[in-house]
Image (cartoon, rainbow over all chains, first blue to last red; front, side):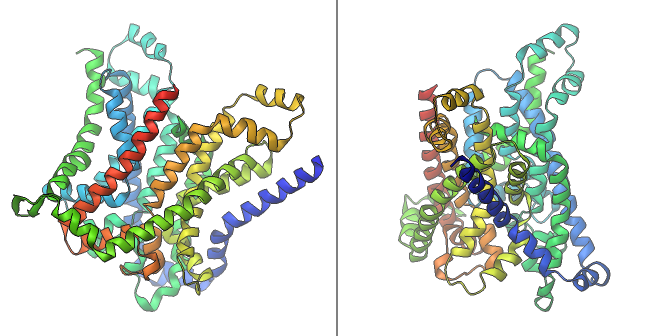
Length: 249
Length: 259
């Protein structure tokens, strides 16, 4: 009986792994070598688009993790009263669907005259409530004494942030970076609404920019887009698992 | 300068960002939803709300979104619970499964939309979008639940096993009741994510006007945005915000009571 259960569980695990991997493998199966050749050598539109996407995602990832790091530190050690309110606001914002936050984002960007620039795509994502919330949840578990002990020595801010808090937060920073990078690489609505100029549109709105007669390239483009994220995920998988797990609290 | 003040300054940039891009504009959106027009700042009462609600496309979109929630949230939650239960144990296959389950969350939707489009080419229902949604976002539920499940101390399991409890009994009587809170959070996440499926759906259909059965609230909002009908959109935004706020407040209130 016990053995039967174990075999069943193994089979179930195998089946789930297969089902989850299926779409990815399917993409790899569908793309032909010739498509890659065409895309990477012959098509002149591909490289600027790809680097544009990559630049946007990297800027969002770096900016968001830095800002969230500072914000979480400030929230934990700087703000006493009002912290609960701030946290609930962040939680609420983080749970809002994109369609709801897009209009406020749009209004804010329009008032500052930032529409149709790269900043329009980067800035709202950098101030991601999700990143701040997650970072704070993680920082909450840091012992209070760590800071108190260092403050006997120095009260200057930068060394404390750099040498005390930063090393503790490494895995969470990695998780936030990869998550926000992925979000940046995957944004669809923002480029549709915030930018009009064609050269600013990233690869994620491929169906908008891919000429009709080249639609067979979708598999090849998909795989090339997947690669940076597969690499990042492969490198930081454990940190991501650990870091994102702190959302549960 | 005092240390505390310096730390407060650290929070400033993020606070500014949140204020400028989210909170202050949201107040303007609230205003938009009750004035006559963008440049006619005269109180219009709840006219836009009534107009939005009586719009037949809004009703259809609302129905489709409800259907999406009703169909997907239970599957999402059950799937996340099941997957995190079976990949909880140590072992190579479990850890591979855990990695694979989280991966879709990080892949650009555009990279895999081709696969879904090819597999579901002939299906005349919102099923492809539902499965795309489940495939992509279930990872989030799994991270949260497996973190919760693994924080249960092993002694409890040991004691249960000593008393002769099998795997299923342990799951039903220990793991799930102890993780009621994270499971509830997963349900909330599932609801919230089902309001987000626009991206997958949009890439799948490649148009602003999908077949009727897939026309969700997000499409409605999207099309209002493209038509620059801010009033209607603001009204719809405010309604969805209120809906989700109620959910979150209910959730946090219950959490406060439990602690």
